[in-house]
Every structure is written in C-alpha cells, then in structure tokens.
Image (cartoon, rainbow, N blue to C red; front, side, top):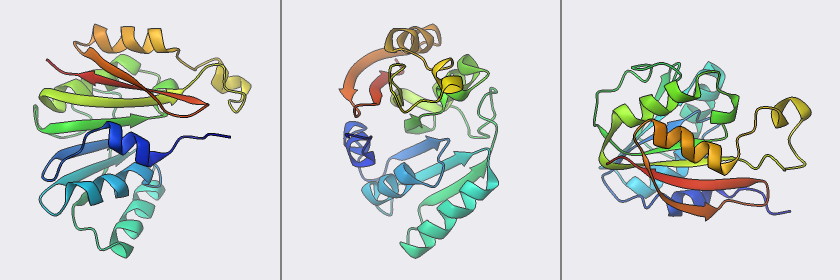
Length: 177
C-alpha cells in the first residue's frame, strides 16, 4: 500500500533555507519536523492545531531533535485572522488532510491566502474520495480535486501543479498571485 509520504510533500513544497512556513493542522508534526530541518536555523515553521495535545507532541519532537525554529500555536484556522499572524508573511502553507474536516473550508483557505506573501504557495494534500481507508462519515465529507481547485480559486489562488501523494491522497500546489 502506497500511503502518503511527508518527504514527498516537503519536496513538492520547494522549501528553501530561510523561508517562513505554516503547517495547518500539524497533528503530531510529520510535516513540521521535516520542514524545520529543510529551512535551517534562519527559517521558521509555525505549527498550528486546534488540539493542544498535538502541539505538545510537536514541542517534544522539536526538543528531541534540537530544532529551535518551530513555534506552536493553538488556533482556530477556520476564521479570518485565526492564525494570529500578520498578512503577507509566509512563503508556504502546508494544509494536509484537514480541509475535508473543516466546517468553514473557505474561511480556512482565505486565512492561508491572507498570511501568504505574494507568489507564496499553499501545498494541499487531501483524501481521494474513492479511498477505501476513509470511514463512511469521512467519505461524505471528502473533496474531489475539481472541487478543491474551485474552492482555492474562489479565494484568489491559481493552481500551479498537481502531484502524486499516494494511493489514498492527492496533492495540489496553489499560488497566491
């Protein structure tokens, strides 16, 4: 089974040393830790989650890896200004497996747009609606690629590329003009 590999997502994000990156819905930090390593000591990752226990796991992993360039933030990203970051700050936003769960998808996408610099990119990974791993309740919420594209374009993004993210996921990169 070819499940999603965070290393591929980080590669597709084209991260460079010194960049500022957000990990929306960071969970236990699969992307956060890899991104922090890729960004070096001059870059920074803002790891967001609504679950405080996930942020504690990220802090613990960062400490164990001696990574000082991660800031964890407890936030509701479904609202404009929910991230508490200033506008046009970030180079990349990683949004993995959370848009399908969101009750305010457009709000979350709008917040990612607000905090990205011009020409910044949102790297989106979400479930293929046909995945056999999704539970029935999740299948009802899964978003196909065309609808995801429409959602991001409705908030001002343009699709830069699609990429293979595993048998059960798809990947898309959207650019802020």
